[in-house]
Length: 106
Image (cartoon, rainbow, N blue to C red; front, side, top):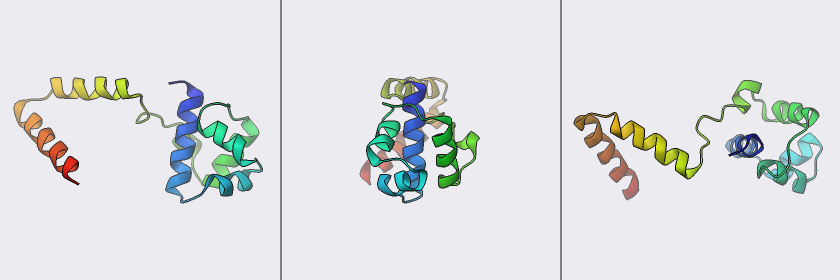
């Protein structure tokens, strides 16, 4: 996943957590909604000026906006989970198994 895509996903994630629509955030930062949509989908890279407006409007620290550790492709997630499972002892595996099954029942 490219930097554009990760940043776009992160902007979208924070925007949604703040209960803002694309339209409202676009208005706050002085963009039209299609341009913000392109940024969030990783189709367009954000300018430094727009980035500053996004940071201010979302009331987020710069370093938090660039925290992509949890944003991964499906294959990256599977690889990470597989490594965790392979490094686990039987008790941990049993715990993970129970947690996954509980989550799937919800």
